[in-house]
Length: 255
Image (cartoon, rainbow, N blue to C red; front, side, top):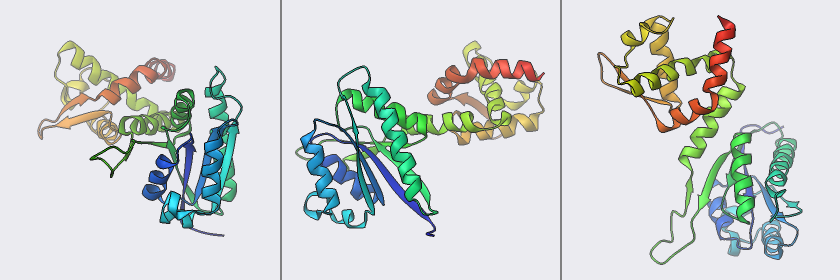
């Protein structure tokens, strides 16, 4: 049984291999799963290049890929496309875990190739599955390097949602502090630990600890020394809008 980590690319594949080559060179994966539609002839050619480890088309790091596989969806242009992408992602993740041989897996998903509906499906499936996402720009005159970038907000959102989705009550309870920070911001009130002690049923130590956790997740920002002032981030407000009401209901039931 192997040890360590293995990287997995789940790549929505269109007719061109350029974005896949960039992803392989950037991540240097052990497993590559292409998702394409049955009518795409270009995707089948790219798969052949992968299987043959064609360095001319896919770069030197293609030699280190242990397993490649194509997952086909039936229709890339209908109202069923997005749900088919979800199913394809589930298949890729299941297969990668079968091949892991004891290694921890790191998943990365491209959201550039294929039809627009496939891209939407890839993005939603990645968020739902806790998979880091990347985008690859087209090469243009004067811009031929650093074409790949990870989608920061999307990946932070994914991380936060999975933290709350799979965490215990303590994680969800952190949103009570975030909600108070947002309320104070919107009403023009000062937001410090001592001020929050006046309106929350928690000690100053608990508030400070919770806010630091929220900061580590990118949901709040902390400025100053003594006192420290708290403010929400765009990500924090977005996450709160998704979980806030549910968290409030949970809190009421626990009191």
